[in-house]
Image 1: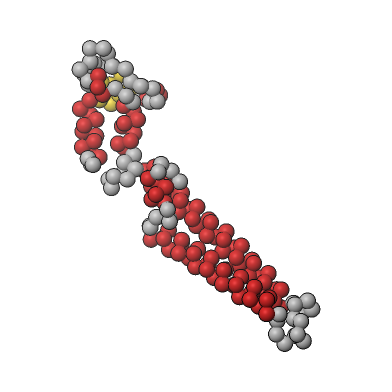
Image 2 (image 1 turned 90 degrees about the vertical axis):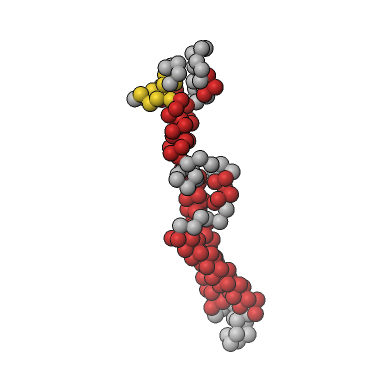
Length: 168
């Protein structure tokens, strides 16, 4: 892949920026920025007629390409995926933590749940509490991992694939 400097040089060999106009260097016909989504039409005798299309869109894509070759839109998609991963992890942890708290309250209820003289909780409730607590711990670990990825600049899980597919 060509670097951004070479892409700009190639673009400038066909086009001149003149305020809010891009002009074909050969036929001098202009294309205004406000019509960037419309195809550019060269004069019929233009030698660069092959360069038609949408020059503003081409220039924009060159300028939005990072030196690494990754576009700004890809980076935004990755950041959005990372934010979404953090939110999902936080919501999952909150729900699991709440379930574990509810299980603890049920476990400690002296009137309805301790059926064998208050010495030991009912075995099923103890296992529900342990499982809820384990799920909350796993959700908290997932949240911590998502935060660590965000702090280290690593992409969220699946963010690169989403960016390569054109969005998250």
